[in-house]
Length: 470
Ligand code: OOG
Ligand code: NI
Image (cartoon, rainbow, N blue to C red; front, side):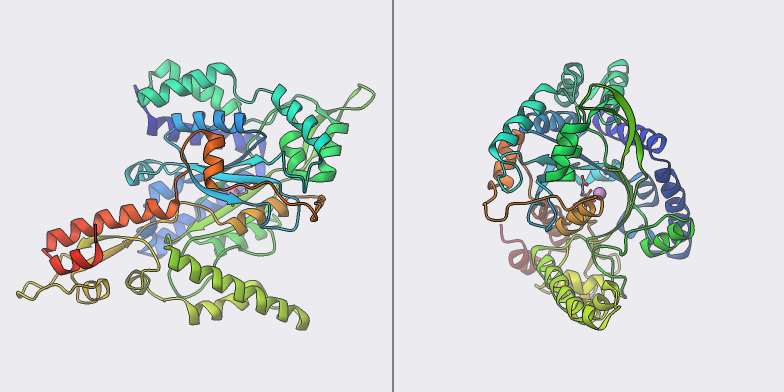
C-alpha cells in the first residue's frame, strides 16, 4: 500500500516535472531557488527554524481554477485522496478593481505531522457564474451550459480517488494509474480553443475566459519556497526575467519573517490552437500562466493579523501621499512602519499573543524550587518555556488578487451598480460538500495542545488555569 502522504509527495513531484516541461522559466526559477536556499542554509544557522531544509526543498503550492460547484467537488475528491482538505475562504471579487469573478479555498494537509511529511497545497478558485456584476442572465446560462458539458476529471480518476481516501492509500498499480490521471487532469490541453467564445468571455474578464473559455483546466502556476526572497528577486532579474514591480506582503525588515512574502513573473506566450468562427483551425498564443515564488514566516493570530492589516492600510495611505512627490517604493514606506509598529523578536510576538508557536519546557529551566509564573511573558522571559514558531501554511487575499490581476491583459468589465452573489466559508463548504476549515482554529489547536502539555510537564498549575481554560 502506498500511503496518503506518499501519494501527495509523488503528485507534487510529478506536477513539478510536468510544469517544468510546459513552462521553461519555471525550471530556471527552481534552479535559482535551490541556489539561494543552499546559500541561506549555509549562512544562517536559524534557516531551519520555519521548516527543515528537506521540507523547504520540495515545498510547493499550485494554483488551479474551476468553473462550477460540481467541478470543485470533484477537485476536492482528488485532493482528499492526497490528504489535502479545504482550509480558508478567500473572496477575490472585491479584493481588486479588475474583474476577478472567483471565490477560493486552499487544499492542504491539516495535521502537523502531515505538513512535515509534505506540505503541498493548491489554491483553488471557482468561477462565480451567477454574479450579475460580471455576467448577465444570458451569458450566465451559456457559460453554465458550456461548463456542464465538459469533464475535467474522468470517472476512473474519481473512483480511484474515492478509494484512496477511504483506504488511506492505494496499492502500487492503482497508485500509478491514479497519479498519471491526476497529473493529466492539470496539463495544458491541445484541444482547439473556440476563438469567438474565448474572446467574448475575455471582454468580461480574462480570468473568466481562462476558466470558462476552454474545455479543460490547467495548473496556473507552481510556486517553490525560498528562504531569501530579496536575493532571489535580484538574481532572477540578473537572469533577464522581468519580475513584477515588488515583493508582496510584509517588507524586508529587522524582525522575524511573518506570514507570506511573494513575487512573480509573467510566463511567456504559449502556443495554442484555435477554432475560428469559420470552422478553420489556426495556431496562436495565449498568455495566462505564471511563475511565482514565496517566503513563509510565522503564522499570526487574529490579533497579529489585525496589526498586519493596519500596517498595510497605513502603508497604502502614505504611499498614496508619496506618489505625489514621486518615487518611494512600497518597501521603503513599509519598513519604518514595521520597525515602529510590530514586535522585533519571536519572544515578543509570542508574549503579545500576536503569533502562533508550539511550546515546550525549557531544558535549562529554573530548578531552585521557584514556582513558574502564571503568564506567558513571564514563563518565556524567566526561561521556563521555549517557543518554536508555527509556519504560516495559508495565503493572503490581497497578494492572491495581485497574482490574478498582474496576469491580466485587460481590466475586464464590472457593473458596479449591481450587487454580487453572496459567498462565505459556509456557502463554499456547501458547494464543495465538505467542511472548510478555519486556519486560525487549526493553528490555535496546535499551539494550545503543546502549551497544555508543556505546562503539565512543568507542574505550572497557575499558568495552566490562566492560559488553558478548557
Ligand atoms: C491563484 C492566485 C492566488 C497565491 O499565491 O496567492 C495564489 C490563481 O492565480 O489562480 O496562488
Ligand atoms: Ni500562488
